Length: 450
Ligand SMILES: [Zn+2]
Image (cartoon, rainbow, N blue to C red; front, side):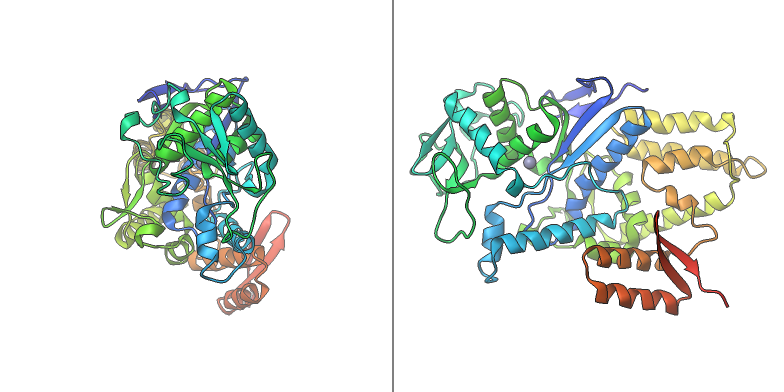
């Protein structure tokens, strides 16, 4: 078991992972707000934390990955209203899309995917604890967190309390005791079509308290690793940290891990600035292998520039790994190559440095190629498995990539219960000479005989 060090935003330093309980590592990664299809930038934290959990399992830890689904939020009301739709129906539809789109990454599901709508009791209980400890106050059906009661406030995002803006605009401004305070609960407005009962009145929770409650309910506190995009550090994570510390007297997390943004034309890629590239579209165009490789080429903390050229380049690199795999034999790799395999995992143990790990894998392949004959593939399989790319060694005699991609799209269509689309994709596969069979281990591609 390697010593794992990860960069902690709170301390600004590398911090050794020290589980509370034996080998168990709880990871809470903030998930999507389900008001539209997710873009490829939203896939980055999903990939980073899914792969981190794989690496920790490889090292002998027992990770539990939680990625919440924010299905109560202003953005959902704002998207549903002009479309003339019920907000809960829109959220349910976008949740199904999110599951289907991220399924296509082929990394499995997080262990828990709590939804705010199913955790309102826990959320209300946490707000009650904050009111009881006088860190929060109810006013006209709203509840606000009293920021100045917590001296540690601002320590996570390293911001001066006098320079902060909660981003809540004029909403509730007249009810707040201090402009710095932020909403934990909002009374129902006439324009909102969902609401829940609470001791201070009917309404719905604010975004930040949802995560504090879902994290505590699924993993307990202080959980080992809290993750998410670095655009969430303030106010979202600062407020999550504040709520849990104030209510429980315990930090929410031991390590705060933040991934960099995916950038398009150097601007932050997000729905609000309009640079939309849907995850589903990117997967249609380049496939999941190339996308995973592209993410791994960048250090998780750094921004990555997104461009079709870089995705095409990643697809070519993935193809080279496939080629290298074809030159290998089944079975154990020579011990002389273990130094590169070890360098790969050492790089991941050192703040999850995937670019350095890929360089070590390239060294392994170079040396394997110069061995004068086929060497055993076991090291390469071990490395690729931790990156979710073990399939690169499996497709030798198998279906070409575009057929595999069609089969993935068919599986995604079936998961969404879109059987008409699934049938069309099955016909496409047949036209290319492949039959798809739904076996116990998932769909299998079988060549149609002559
Ligand atoms: Zn969150």
